[in-house]
Image (cartoon, one colour):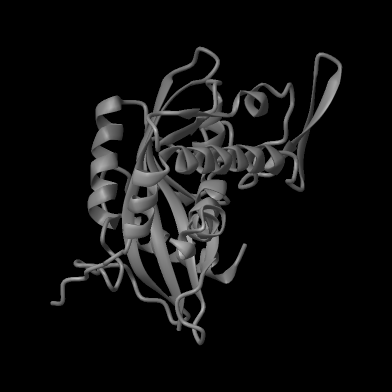
Length: 143
Length: 138
């Protein structure tokens, strides 16, 4: 895992944790999610990471971050999808509504909402679990 | 607040599409084929993950965050590109669990295999078009 990814994980977790009573503190990255986690919860993970050549003197990274709400109720999953989009879309420091926490090493320049995540998870005839969210394109710059 | 504005000169590409639409279509076919090939080649490149045995055959899964390792090969063999109009190509897989690998479920951690290659392709498409369509010479 690169430093940019580690930093982004910290920023996203801090921003989303307790941002809504729907999920409370139950916000987990792929490496921290535990089997006993109670639904509904927020789950996020890196879908891709590429170096971006913008300025020679500064390092930039473009990351695709998938963020989804996981719930047993479709209405709740859709509500989480909307809340997560409100919390994250255009939240970078160069965006129209900057609101992500600052970090001493990396700046999140832009956050752009991408494709929707729509997945109905029916595991071994157990309860239906709904995954709803979005993929976000995130541009980061090393300070 | 300044309003960001991006201006792109696509006049040469538009001219080429008007003059030689089949040349552009053929290049797009090739680019789509390259993406499909790269996605397939990425499967099996993960460091070894969990090991499980099913029907007497042992399979070593990929690690979460890496493309899946082929097991019975239904996902990898189902990935294809199709023409959707003259200058649009659609790349997809044909199995139900493809999206489960890409986005993860409660019981299977995500193993993105489409998005990494799509992003890499986004970075090289401009140069590829310049090189293979000869845009500099129009």
